[in-house]
Image 1 (cartoon, one colour):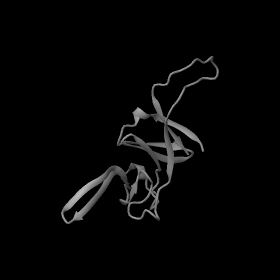
Image 2 (tube, rainbow, N blue to C red):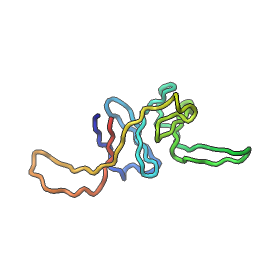
Image 3 (tube, helix red, strand yellow):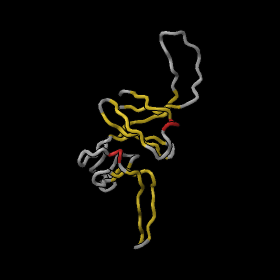
Length: 134
């Protein structure tokens, strides 16, 4: 599994997505309330750039004319045909057992920057970086 340092965690605020190229794949990195998720930037329906879609939630209703929004910021809607996917699992909202988007592991790690050509000294890392594993 290849490791790719994406950016500092603070550079991707909650509710935002950053689209990157890694291992010849376009991948969207999402920050959902401080937790990070990665999805392939390709809709399985017709190949649309999925991660450029709208980030939304689910609308639930117990009775007519009574609706509530749940899971706000966790659902990604395809920009071409409106198919919806759970960002946290990659599974389709409509058919979660048969349709999904490829997900990737993401971690927030502390990195020590080193240059092997110079003498090194202990370094204190003060910011965390987002690291993608493909």
